[in-house]
Image (cartoon, rainbow, N blue to C red; front, side, top):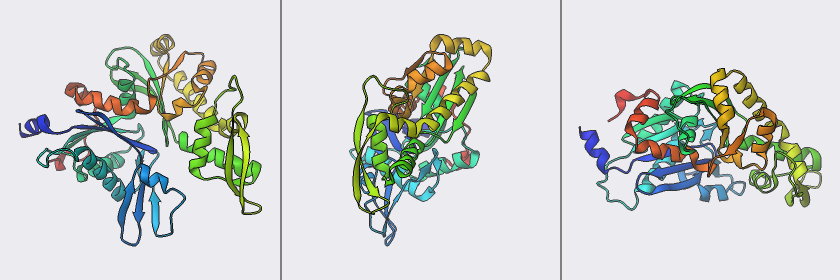
Length: 350
């Protein structure tokens, strides 16, 4: 009864705790935070200097006593203490404009399909320690489907491919559940590493992570574009140790990331092969929906459609599908109850 009363006044939140970006949805204000999942820590004082965009700006530019940390790896917590502080920073930021008497929020958080009970407990504990009243964990593909406005509760087959920063999750859904799925640790960050390795092997040029990401976003393609693209690539020459700039084109970037792209496509096909025929018929009729940042790679939808012989579409604003799905669940307590994972810390929730 007391919890229900608190729920009326609290600013409940939906959180997409991603490897690359953390997004927060407030029931009152929509998406209120979209920041990189990066934290800058002063090792001398053990204090957090900055979180999100400010910390990302420091990447590759810090003195030895300042450490840039990515507390999430492949969608799960790799540094519990820093994740807790990052979540507390974001939750406090949402409540900055409110009175201090506003109750602690109930929080819906998306988790990867392969998350173990120990990893789920770590996420719950971090959110509770950061100031959440109650934590609901829901599998990312279900949230992505909700955010893409798919009829999650109906008895029809839907296929969602969520290409994030640390993981790619391929799931066939029906009746608000996951029927068949695959989870890969090949996604956006792996493509960045592919570009860094390609520049090293082909041009003897050492690139920073932010530069590789910029190349991928600006001229990265899964298939040959109608018009060629090119951009300057700056880094350190491994032979002379001096700065060097060269011009790189879309075909070179495509060659760099082709193994990762091919792996994602092959696993989509393998997932379809293990899907019940009735659901495959539905998927053929309705198409595959791409979500996550990787869905924005030029030509990714066309390549998958060609290889799988199934229509493919990119969801509206694919980067925010998971957090928008979490936001929709805040408005639908019954569906939230139906699709939430069992709590690993039920006994400790206040």
